[in-house]
Image (cartoon, rainbow, N blue to C red; front, side):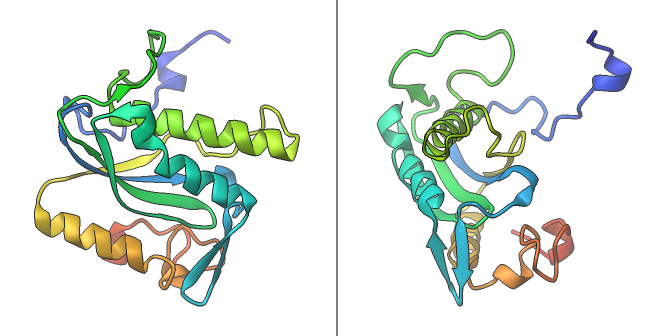
Length: 190
């Protein structure tokens, strides 16, 4: 298929001209394909991770082993998405092993490269276990928010910790009361 900018143009959801490789804290949300819940289930206020959810959690915890100068803060693996705070400490997220240069996609030292490597690692392991090579686990792209101050950081930490307890009100929960609403529609403010 030939690329036609009028048909194939996708509007970026990233902050224009912002360097997502610079030092800072970033809140990311990564959703599963079609918002299915292969990562587990919520029982009361607790998330019970499936085998795939355990892989997603282990790979999230391993991010600092693969990216120098990256630390993790609060995170939660939900049935159909992952919320987490990624902190780039010195302004560059260096992958432990050099990644090949690619003409498209996120810079090698950015939030995008961290999320891309994470999604790829989880998908490879899940597909190997499930015998589904090449199957999509994640939806395309991810959501992010640049955390600008301590007040926002603390709010996002609470939001992340409370996510299982608020599952029925979560816009990512297909069985929830707010499914399909944006965070802004839920009064998700910083």
